[in-house]
Structure formats: structure tokens, C-alpha cells
Amino acid sequence: MLSPGDDSNDGTQQRWRGERHGFPEKGPGSIASIGRRTFAIFVDFLLSAGVAAVFTQPDLPKNWSLLAWFVITVVAVAFFGFTPGHALLGLRVARIDGKTFVHLPRALLRTVLIFPLIPALVWDADGRCLHDKAAGTVVIKVR
Image 1 (cartoon, rainbow, N blue to C red):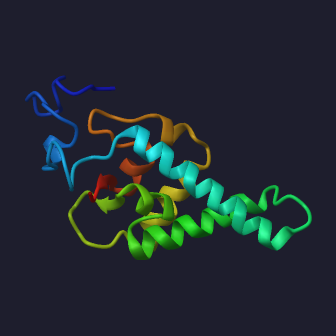
Image 2 (cartoon, rainbow, N blue to C red):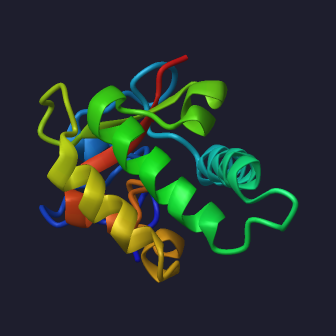
């Protein structure tokens, strides 16, 4: 893995995460930190457990919360560009090519790849996890 300041593929030094893709260093449009993204997914997990619990009362939701999380994440990212956790923390999933909408195939691929956890725990110098790289997306700050 590269870290900021290491040589990138074209031999130039990267000064901040996302610089080689044209993202600003700070503020809206900059790459979101791993901490903020982690907090956002925990918010989504809690929301999903609550949604699943509504349908499984009086029993615990068990794996139904995973299904709720999957559906909420795919639909929200595909059509709005953010999950409820992203919205709460001022984040958005954007396409690396600059197009406006993530769309269903990319959102589905990105979400499926989060399940084994490894893609979400490995990232590059730009702060893009493997599931984002595979889907051609990046998580950015909106505020």
C-alpha cells in the first residue's frame, strides 16, 4: 500500500489523499477519512438492526438485519449516493469518473464486496478501499 507522500504510479509524489484523481485536500469534495466512514457504517448497522427488529418482534432480528442493511445500502447508494449513516456524517459515494449517479450495478458490486470485510479493510494512498476501487467509486465529504 502507498501512503501519502509515496510515489504514485506516474512517478510523482502525492501530497494528499485523492490528489492524483483531482480531489481537493480539505473540505467538501475531499476524500473522507476512514474514521468517519467507519462511524457511518456502524450507524447503518444500527438502523438496519432496528428495521429488522420491527419485523421480527418479539424475537431478535438475527441475520435479517444483514438483509435490511444490504437492501438499504444498495438502494440508497444507487439512487441517492449516500446511506443514512453517510448523510448523518456529511459523506457521499461518488463515481471516480465524475458522473453524477452511482447506479444499481456499481452500488450492488460495492455492497456485495463489503460482506467479506477484507475489501473494506484494505485501502490505498487515496483512502479508497478495495470495494470502492472495484466499483469505480470513492467516498467524499459533502460538508
